[in-house]
Length: 391
Image (cartoon, one colour):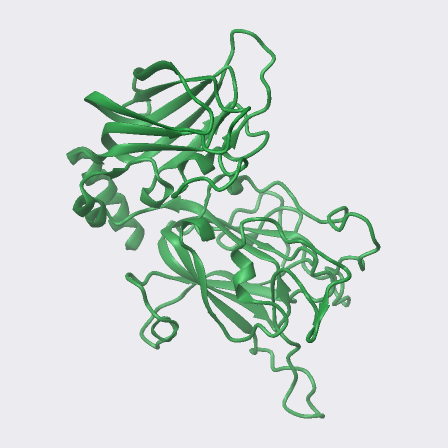
């Protein structure tokens, strides 16, 4: 198998990933840790889909619900939002303590057959925090330099509700292979583009035959159940849980603008959107979002929690209806207070598909909520896309 730089087939590795060299089973190993910054020789590449929401983010409800083995390191580490850390001096009763999911070494049936059978592998079941269409997956083997899996594969399924591990593994559950068994590199970000356009709720991550994975990121587009949103009536039209998404921004220097639309309140200063200091007069920072479908906004919340000396000085909010609609004012330029929630009830509904938040001249916003409901047109559009992704 070879991987072209422009390869974009289902489950194919992204550019700069290569299969083991013929005759060298250790071609994908990283060099042993030699001291200093453990990320100095970390191998990564440009993965454009990482700007999309991480559907497996623990902060939106994702979880690792089961694994067949986690002898050396717990399965829950896979979904920690922060990057993996490495302490060369940290050992426990079972050996080196690693920040990831690591299984024991598999063995064969007997002394005459010391290696495991080709089909044997370890697995973990992941519940996505928000069901959606997967566009790309990152299997991060940071700090697993010689103890990463030889290959990985990933299957996906759509099971509504809150199924148990036993229900997910039942014979009547259909799993789609979205990444076939594929070689990965140690101490690297291994990216896979996904193109099938299906809506999934759970993944099964497999290590062939065993090893360690530091983090799993599952980037895509949240596709909520329209019947659930209709039952809610009024909800946050911008939340990632309900299908809101970040499209573009003037600045992403300190953090991703997607954090503005995460559920809950921010926990610290970097748990929001903060841009660098703007030095060009008569300009400002901005971020643009897309609603899950056309909605009628009735009230807005903007929170600057933990942003004390670096909150946006003033903000304004504009909206538009449709890809080519004209931008119109929803909230005129108004001063913000640092480390404070702000509420803005609207005198009339704003019917929009997109909104743009302007920060003057720069600064941070922790969270933004758009309270309202889908219009009849919006509900019909979301229902159509929902049914297509389930076909």
